[in-house]
Image (cartoon, rainbow, N blue to C red; front, side, top):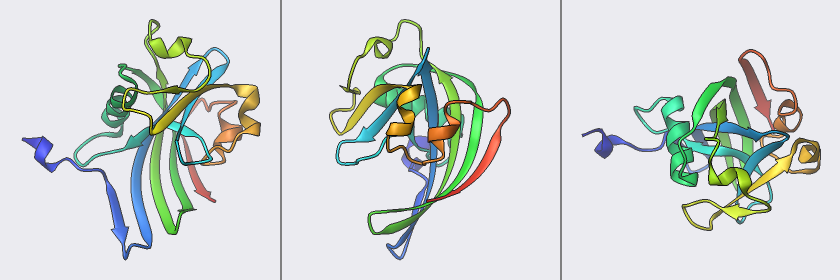
Length: 163
């Protein structure tokens, strides 16, 4: 019944501004973090996607990672809520994000991946593990993550970010 009402929480205003509700996960393995990027983009982001109507951000991050990588994750805790303002293409974005620390199953195929690899959705998204000491060399969006990912907060932080 609910499936017919499900849609991403993204709204356009005069085709110039966009409001978006996104959730993503910090996926780590020892000294590495998993990031992804669209094949045509020159920047990396945390794994995740849009929250849908009538869906919690926790359910959304579980769904997104299952859809993209085919694995069930465990949410450890909420790290950040983010009000992010940025320009992408010819549009101005106002994006609300929840960022969770999440855990992959120990036996996950993703943990053993080296170099760039594809998810299960196809080749439009590239995934890659990066060492934490490489983060300052990367173009990561939102850019505050470059510094914040190295020392994760002990408590939930609220961030207002303008790029």
